[in-house]
Image (cartoon, rainbow, N blue to C red; front, side, top):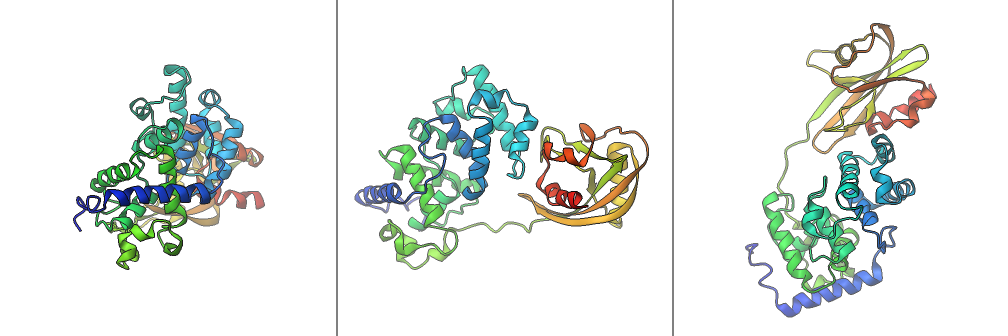
Length: 366
């Protein structure tokens, strides 16, 4: 079926029934989550930022700890970015935290501390894309803006049996417009949450529970026995893997850590120095070379601590970690923007990437 005609093929009466059944199901079966029912736009905003690319069960403790430390927008805006990143540590996608902190400052200085209650004004804040803007404006302010996240796209792809690929940018407009037409005159926030909840609990990527779906009688993929064929996705390229070496450089009972530039991947976080292993280079050689290039230090390798693996959005790494000792030189940075010689009992006060967090417990055991 051509994707431009899928929605038009559904009768108006059926659209109303889909909408009504969906909302009734949500009112009865939705999960009790800490941000639901929150009237504070700031709290809703924080939850939606955290929920991007992250599962609900992972977000809940982070959300609760975050609001304990920063209960309102003003407290977040006035906080040190390092404290914000430390609370975000392990949640990943750290640009979300940096942008949220910047945006809170802008709201405090340019909007008198009030989260903008209009789509355009809110959309201009750092880190606020169409999804965040639609979700916050609809849930917090009843703005008529449909969301089209992964859960919503999956529901729509199956209900209308569309061949529009959910991971193709040119398809996004169709999913968003279709969600908007389906929303109709429903309370926007309620409808958006119902669609997302249906995708999360019932219309799951694998093993969807069609038998208890409130709108299965309207779902074309279900009627045609093709639920497993939808949603359609464009097959991506294999994820590249990078070999990295890092060193725990020790000197007089202290260890060297460096801080990354504030922008870009893992911006503002602290880490143990190191970098990519070149072709025909051993991990030990790479560790010595990278630390010399980044910090101006000559170091020696004592032992191999461990190998850790970690996956980012577009690539994976496997990292060999070495225990090292300082031989000569004073720190002069090329790449990192700051450094510290710290004792092991100070390490928990600094925000680290998850890859480093995987081997830090071994340092404590040693």
